[in-house]
Amino acid sequence: MKVLLFGGSGMIGRELVSALSAHAVAAPPHARTDIADAVAIREAVAEEKPDIIINAAAIIDVNMLERDPELGRRINIDGATHVARAAAGAGIAHLLVSSSYVFGDSSEPYAEDAPAHPANVYGKTKAEAERVVLSCGGSIARSSWIYSPYRETFVDEVARALLQGKPFEASAQRGNPTSGSDFASAIVKNFIDSAPKSGVYHIVNEGSASRYELAREIARILGVPENLVVAKNFPSSAARPSVLLKNKKLPPLPRWEDSLRKYLTRNR
Image (tube, rainbow, N blue to C red):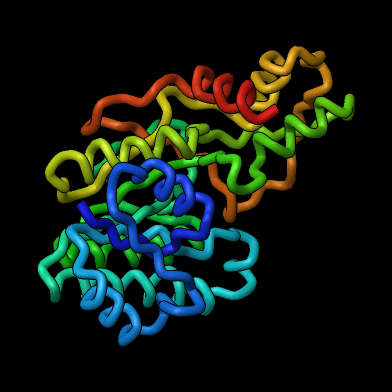
């Protein structure tokens, strides 16, 4: 199968390229195909003639988008709209990579059919992009707290500090720690190697944790004193709510603790 991938140079994009090694992948760089350029997107679709299109291109910096919401609209909404309309116009299956931040703060996990109600600009842009993609017959794959060797994330920041013997302050914010490799493999298994599915899907490792609990688990895996991890109540911010996702549709991924151990064993 031939896959046209937008956002192939990003963290999730690079995980997808790796997971798609058995398939033909076209991942045009931003310099050649700007996702905010509708004409360039249509030309890429016409030239590559893919069997499926995956859009993993997005601005994910939550703080940046609070300062510059127009940037989020141009890339996350307008870009997703261009890709969705080009895919629909060519009759090609289309998948958008989305985020748990389409939801607001909650102690209970959200299922796939829960109505979106974002609490930050990033979440608002992804929720609007989802609406457009679904109206064009595309599919949505949401995830949460993805970590990967292709970009430093919270997991790597914690591991580096603890291995240097430094204390690390972590909050009570909750999410679903998810392996980028597990996420990408699930995309390939459920949308590429089998018939593409329509609708909304949650792809997260099983279970949930606070940032404090996640950091303590990292300490245990690395064999360093857990008391290096210190609980701290950071000033509350609507920009980073606690959001949990529930996967009710796809085969479950491994427990987050197991995938985290595998990641740290390979990358530390």
